[in-house]
Length: 87
Image 1 (cartoon, rainbow, N blue to C red):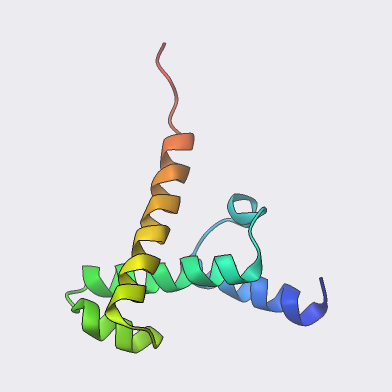
Image 2 (cartoon, helix red, strand yellow):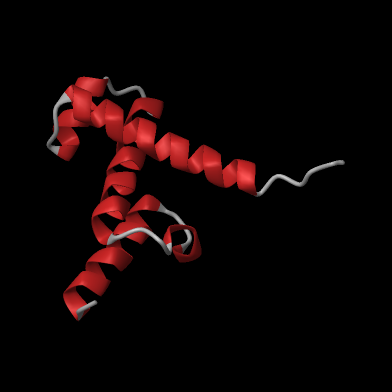
């Protein structure tokens, strides 16, 4: 991985607000998608519409919805992995 790709990866990890260990198996494009999904999720949580959030990240409503769903699925998977079993 060259320096530019490494920097892009680090920037995406920071934007997605994820731990590097959680995204170790993902490439920079996948992490960028998660970061965009987080941006959409954050925008919707502050009251913006999906159209406004999509315009902010430069995608259509359908793509923004898909990116948000990917982010939430990834985040929920991380949360489930961190659960301690009681039995």
